[in-house]
Image (cartoon, rainbow over all chains, first blue to last red; front, top):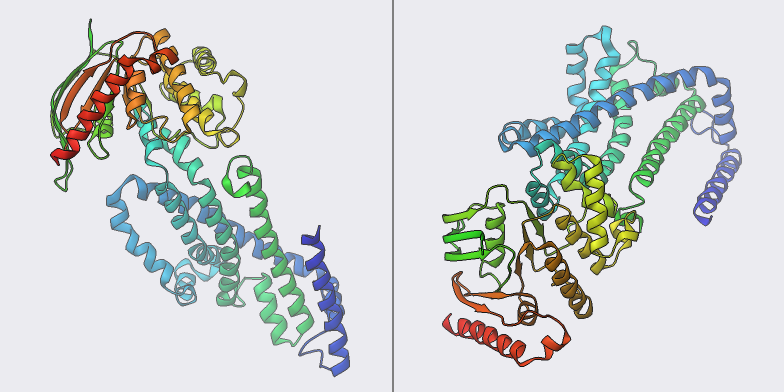
Length: 254
Length: 245
């Protein structure tokens, strides 16, 4: 109970203090609006902000989905064949270590400005997929050798070893990777929207830029609040999935 | 007596040149219980893995009857943490493509044999070390093995549990009539369980093949002169072994 009440109390106290200090010091509204103004902006622009939220959410969602599919598949491929891993691994790392903001304009040009949404999904995907790949690899490689031998003795085919042993054993690692990727997909989506600029993008990040340009700082904060809430929901959704899938058997839920 | 496994001049060396087996030759009779003892690193585990087909030898010949089905019990229980006791025991049968009806009968029988009929739906984490080892044994038995390989299976358990499981294993062996190859580093366990004890040298050679007299295995046997003499013989064989290094 304290786990919920304590942060709630700290948050409320902070909001009250914020409301008071802004009024007390006479901080201009275009520098730091009080929470009441932000709430008002949120209500006033609710429909348009929700539209923007859905745009950002769908970019994040698609990027995350393909990161999950791509990361896990590539990890399986790497563990099946040393040859494929040796051939591809350096390029995967290159893609990861090159700052995405630097590649983003290129991707926009290649995919074409008429397909900005696809380009943004690709940009967010690049940011998101690496943790899933490395965590899945780590998980599959950490499977106990005796368990492998056990299935081998039963004459298991490679796909049976994958389904019955490797994927379930790697599940905790995959979920850890997914949790990191979920947050990164959102960051990637925001970066993508920033880079894509006005074009056709109408997500939350774009609303932040737009509101900033118009000095509608309260609206900017409202969009920012929604982004934070989205990030928190993504994080706790992963915790929930972990709890559902692992609580019965994994040591982390002892 | 027919032979279960005939091994001729088996050698095993790893890529780094370390030899773990040198010219191992022995015939394992069908239905026999053989214990293999030796200092750590003498290749007794490698021998089991090679005989089970998990590893290829560098040279030598292994003859088994065609269609020999094998069971393998590892040092650790090696259970899949996310599967129940029942699902763990059933997995090898499922992989081999046995139908559900037959799988069910075999799993239930095997679990009854190790005294875990009432724990079918438990997850491994809910079991004690001894129970986990029993599940592991049940999983091997459910495959109706002609040959059962056991690699220091009870080594990690406390003394009391081990003595109990030793007796249960003998009971199961008499009923199932399978061939058992049992690796251990405990001389008294080898003496108590086996009909023959093979002593290996630290450089991977078969040194002695000691026959244990007597058919009954109980507390009286443990207290008998025959048991103590056999244990002494094996211990001496192992000690001379150390001097030879």
